Length: 635
Image 1 (cartoon, rainbow, N blue to C red):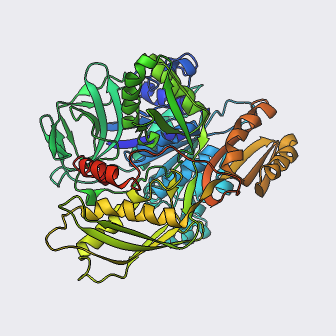
Image 2: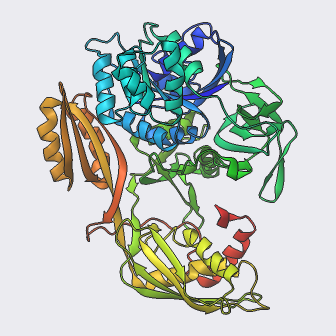
Image 3: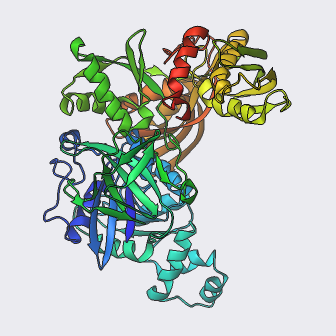
């Protein structure tokens, strides 16, 4: 078996490559076309209508006796969260690069993510039929921009030289004039790939049906099979979720160890959720009833209700990698959602809750006092798709407010935070925190100087573990960071202290300190990778300076110019549309968060608070005691 995912910059031809792979393997009878809305892996109505992939989808087929689980991921950077979650599932990857454009900005983000996840990767240089296409130039751009360890499989001398960098015997033989046969090279290439030391490339045209069978052969020959054992303890991860009209909510899982089968119970929130059906992926999207999933397989489980994406089922220590939410790209804008028909407010929230269950980065929040519903989004395209999804899938049209940039907060000056949580009984948690600001980029630091005689070690650990929740919303509603918090005093009570009293008390002490010390805003600064026709390079560099940005590097690439710059997000995010208009659609830009820096003093944005403010002590205590029953502190 091979579990593979396919990645690419938008419009590099990734979905067409997926279609050709399935067609050659006999999984589909006719080639679907993205522009006509017939691609088999574009299953949502919005995907077919717009001709773009917004959701990862899977298909299972066979080639030369090997089962291949293929996951087709979105190319547009606004749907990076889908790509990010897909990194849980594969053992190998195909990175599609246009032979006409070479490495594009999103290609870099994807390659970096694959390297961090240590997923062996094949390169496929597509669109060789395009005027001006050059596989050699595209490979050169890969070697220059991404890794020097790339080489075409058709270049046996190049393979010898590249592999010789890591194998003394290969280098010695190469210097003596020997060039290994393909059969002798392949196991060496596979070993280097698994060590993330080598990235072999193939080329072809998915549109013209060229190079596809060679790619299939490389998949089963060079990409690794899954490890683990069926007889080991269970370890699986939920990496995606979707809603089926007949079967209800399904969660996609990858099994790394052990087995799952129908009627198995999954523990969640002190309950047991029973699997009602297991289905394997299929090109038509309906899936094939399986009844059982074993180590190495990918499938969809039904009957688990609201089991969230990212849940690990079984032994977490057996996971081969860790994928953090927002590691590829994090949402930087917040919007308010309002139903077009006020009577559908409840239906709108329910629909958005379903979508948030499929995409945890939406971070849906509802303020009961103001009755405002807010969520986070990646960008303009993401919001357009959400609007269309609400209208077509849920029949609940809604609109989104003007996007608000998401800042962070840090402490303005050193201060102390205090809480004496001794009422209403039974409870007892007294603590004194010394809080001081740290330079941007320092994160959150915690230490304790309190004797275990005053506060037992288990309670001190509770204070540290409760800090992420306590710092989630500061005085202005944004996440608090770049702060050192020291537990300097306090006590527990042998009789009156209950197990979670210090968890409840920590946000009250933290907010007391933030109120005393005041906070200031930190703004996100983006690393922008901009590619434009050479004639626009001067204008772009001038624009960067006007946006309080700094050009890091420029590079001429034939008729195009690549510009890397650091620009505050408040100016960089709207510039993407301006760039497209200015260049007539020939310019593009991708971004990632580079750092957080102090915002200009005239910026005073706030974000509506979700839940009860710990400074409203009486109301907060009641809410916190009730919330503990729902395990919100574990999220």
